[in-house]
Image (tube, rainbow, N blue to C red):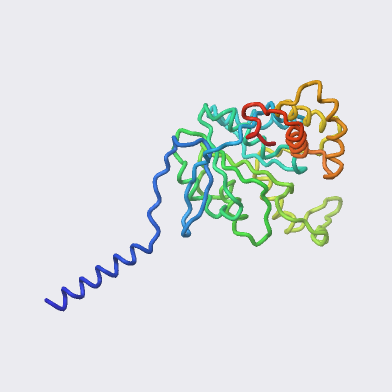
Length: 298
């Protein structure tokens, strides 16, 4: 009995040491703590982390993309109201408001129960776990993937396809995926893939590589495209942000030439460049920004 008691004591001591090395069990999500969350990994285990400081961008802050605003606003309004709505892929020119549009609809509809979960591309393999967390809840969730693109061998590619429209289980009706990308089909396209194209009479049949790439993007029911701004649209956006940062109306004509030079030096007339110019101009002019203007960003 003495030897058995010693063995059990040592075994208990060893188990105690092993328990100290194991990661702590995940804490239940406090859904009332925030309206936006990030999926994060620690010790190989994923969890939701609340976002405490949100970008307070409004739909009215986004200029030059009225058609795109109307499309995503209508789709989100349907979703929040419990009606059918589509997963959304926003693609096109950089700095034109793709990610800002997602943040803006969250700010508009958060009081109606809309919530957002941001997931990095390399964590898309955990999509099924995230879906399980939100299934059955009363809130409506947007699962947000920013600047999404894949190489053919990445595991997140197949995980996203399954969640969108490829699993034997039905998708949760309180979750949609909104993704932004500079690539229409989310994957690189190569000239050699054109050699796989087959011609049957007057019909053109793309090769398997092209079909595989198209199969992911077409799982998004709504495609919203963004295009570079012309000079007038760029200046309108710059003037909007100059006003938001406290620039007097009489000073706007003085900033026009500086705004054009700013865009020329950066090789882009985008909303992001206009916002950056306004911050620089008003900072140098020592204009006092309006409340909340420092936190907004296109």
